[in-house]
View (cartoon, rainbow, N blue to C red):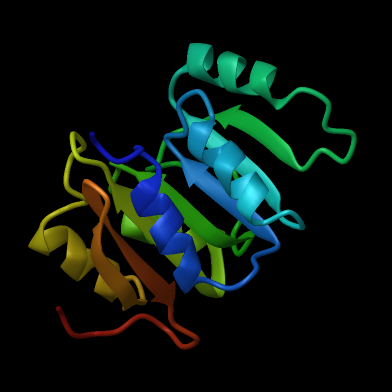
Length: 165
């Protein structure tokens, strides 16, 4: 029996603290964003996806949310519709967001959490990892989980690094 598709995400959240603001990129119909809302009950969760139809479905799943903790918006991983230094955690499943854009919306010390499911695409190759490092991210954790894997990186407290991986 295959592991549930959110297993790598569930394993990865153990490597981050308690964020105030979370962004899930390419959120689809909201499964992972709603999981993150349960994992971090004090955080505001935002989901972004290119598909207007997926955003409508995700929004319909939220139900009663008087505090406005969970919301969804149309957007792309390479052009996120949020201001600079806005999030503490950026999460993606089977997506490799643009490192510079992830670094723009994350606060210094924020985490980038990437999960890969069994049938999903790898989260970038060595060139992408080099770009991540140049954008100021440093590895925190990464391993197999269920039928997939995850990696967690932290945006450095100082400016971007000048060396590669």
